[in-house]
Image (cartoon, rainbow, N blue to C red; front, side, top):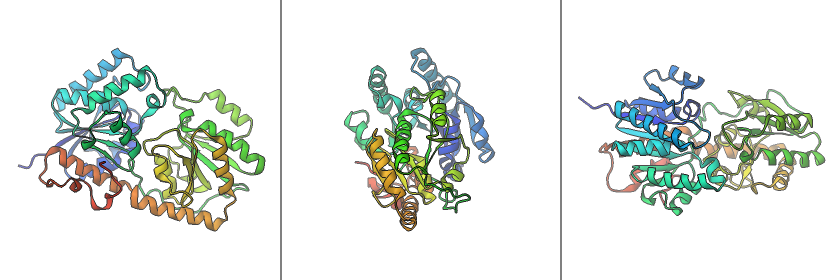
Length: 398
């Protein structure tokens, strides 16, 4: 009887599974793998309506805020006990704490595991004691990993350069992918008198929301009709969270229009003229891939993750990080473009996403990595066999 392999997927929120990993669940279940999701339980557990065959185990000891040593030991112990009980053939860890403590727990039990670095987060943007501790923990967790997969090549090179992971088992891939069937070009349902720039994301200073607002002030001096939307919500678990009072001040000054949180961002993308993300660093900004898939020109910063989304001048602009002036210059340049040029930019972005960021391409790559780790006899000694033809030259191993 053919063995049914069990794959455990660990993440810091079920929200993360719902928004970014459904393509992985789909391809694994389609290929007859038994899948277990291990994540703190929240309202996004509704993903099981689509995947009732997936077992969900709530993770109770994971705190996204802070690094209390006692709490971290409890998390590692909880993961150890879950892995020991469920006996997965392979563990795939996503996000920082699952990567570290899931990796340590799996290595202690001699269970094969993959780590997926989805972004470096607050600790790598702000040097300090936690940064130093994180590097040591990453090095420990990655030592026994089968592979470590990064969502952009800059993060991979950084971790290789810091000797946190061996280069031979590190790979980079173009983010988590975007559903190009769901995110398609759509005609506007409402037109505005001015050009609409839209920021979509968590309201964090590290996302460049401050630069977005300051750039809006500069642009409005020359183009008073320009509109600036914020779509998203605050994340109080993140030290970089913008205060509620600050958001209200921006609203009262009529600099921005706070559209609030949206479960479906497509209506805002379709009615905006450009999507803007002036982030300080990303794994791979899904919102920019979604915007490009809907044929919207984008503006983002020259930092890890973000820069891979833009071919300068072809589907948008890249600006200096932490520079409201550079961002404002790009905004002014974009709003002066004729409609035909904006449409051309949008069409180029759509093609780029289809070729590089489609979530089916990303899922196929992960399937190959899973098959390699569990020892399916589908490979020879040529390392390029790991990479599907359509991902070659887009996934890097060196």
